[in-house]
Image (cartoon, rainbow, N blue to C red):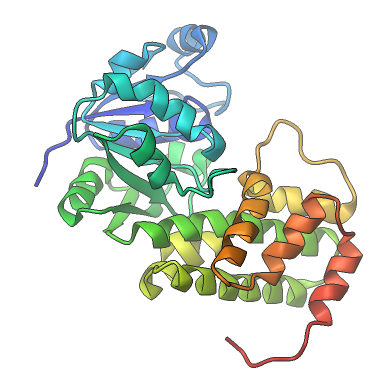
Length: 326
């Protein structure tokens, strides 16, 4: 089994900082890269990140603004938003050692290309080993060391297992798989479906409607996954159903919070990026190209684009032809 003793995290937002804490608790040498020199200086001086107030940075985390220094680590975790992943890997690529695992931790599909996160890594850094980390987790919980379980996928099972051993600890439990596409689909689709669940809550449609949207949403997630070759056990596992349940029930979920605001007719929460906003239209386009019907996701995309009102979207979903359970 490969030995990964050093980990670099690219992106010093809340999630990147939490992942740096994960790697430090696992006993790895950790480098946290921030693009802003001011952020680097502030974190070094205060040992805190403004994105995670009240949480002290783990001792031994080296904070840097030098991408080449970060790229020298045995494992790279990319903690940027999905739509910024290519830019981050392009910056890393000239400095990477051959066969370095580069692990995406964002949940989405790239706009314009319809590429999943590992496909973006493969294109931007041809000598890297693409992998994906996903599952039911919030940065604040992870940073505080609360019990969390996730899924880590790589094409080579030995590499996936080695990465799990490099990051796992008493409070952070990764499971490994080679079903990269299943993990990516679960993470991307659940963000869109969490917006739908939030709309139901914000519109005060009741617990029954929220449960219906969540379960019907999972049904279309599973259809899309099967069409793309994902395994059933992945779709009902942590990175699929588990992540969907968490994201459709907690206000810590930015996508769920956005949906609630939409349902109430309020402005979106300020300063919070909801990946589902960007993923929704791409997911719907991609699903259509595969001949997969995703009515809940399609309704979310239409609402976000201002093409349809929430009331009209709800009516459209409720008046669809009766059919057998899938």
